[in-house]
Amino acid sequence: MLRNSFKLALAVAPALLFFPLQAAGQVSSPEGKGSSEQAAAPRYEVYAGWGYSSINQVNQSRYGLQGVDLSITRDWGKYFGLSLMGNYYKPALKTGGGGSANSNNNNPGDPSVYEVYAGPELHGDIYDRLGGFIHGMMGVEHTGGEQMTPNLSFSGGFGVGMYYRLSDRWSVRVSGDKLGGSFSLNNNSKLLGYSPHTTWNSSATIGLAYRF
Image (cartoon, rainbow, N blue to C red; front, side):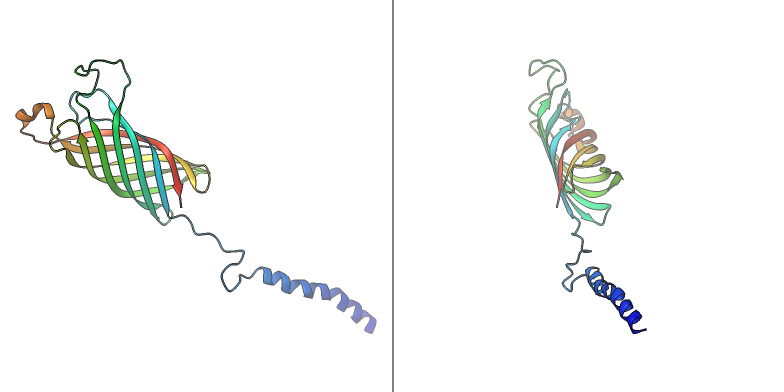
């Protein structure tokens, strides 16, 4: 009887020694630095890329302008964010034959555009690393080199886009927007009395985004 009890004790002892070690490995340390701790999700995303904008407010313009698009987005939760965007377009994106400065083959004057917008964004992953977003924008648009009246106009619109995550921090993003402003036709100022009218511009951008 004593011999059987001794054998049972030898068999159970390793299990009794292992169980406390296993339980301790499953409990986080008091400082909250256990294995179950996860890093905080990024809350900000900055974006920089090449951009294009049509310039329908410039009368007799033939080409749109290209430039740079910049933005920063602050996330609240998984799907919602607020964005601040700034764009500047200057060189013409010529898609046809050349011509003299006064012909219809070029833009009249020396147009340039800059825009500043803010607005909400909804975004989310679609499949694996691929995701999409939609945003609304309100702000101001300036048209220079054309003697526009006014040269600074209230502007707003909406846009949609997609992104592909290269890593947890970096992604490639492409989007298109439809933006409206209120400018006067500079060639018809006497007829219209500088009365502003709404013009809509299409724009597009592609570039890199970084989350932190």
